[in-house]
Image (cartoon, rainbow, N blue to C red; front, side):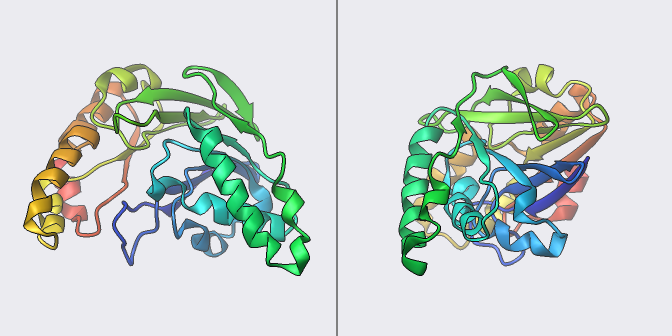
Length: 257
């Protein structure tokens, strides 16, 4: 198994990090875990071609995890490669209706719509949490995690006989969800932030936004101490921190963990 981090940033614009996206491959083909804005530009440097992408696993429908999907459809249609299947939480079919319509609009401006039909009939799945299936030789399983109250959010477990990976998506600390999904997993990729990094980020915001942003992070995201505790209690071999604030300090994260 090979894991390529194409985007490890948050919703805030960051010159160093694209929106959330991770490519997991086995034997040359594989799946994208989320497809955030700016992440597709990282593929060529990593030697990843569009025809290697067999599926996209969506954690939830916030824009920093999905805004790259319409671009992905346009580019894959334009390059005439097989379109990927899409797996995600409830609401994904509705999102994909919009993404497909936008892709068709963009493709309609090129060569009198020559490639428009390539985005029709894309397989979109909203699998029940806990259901397992195999995609591109990789076993996948979604698990509901707590995040924004108006969205269904999933963590994903992807595994081959040689390696298993759990990707948290966005979630408030959820020991219950990860106690089974991540127990004994080789790699846990988990969103994280530090209080110090958040305070640095909020310095650039209007004062009236501070309380709302602070509350949102406490209620819907995972601080580093909680993430490290989950990793310790589930016995994972490696913890990788992602979804990082632009003003986050890697040293602070490592020290706290």
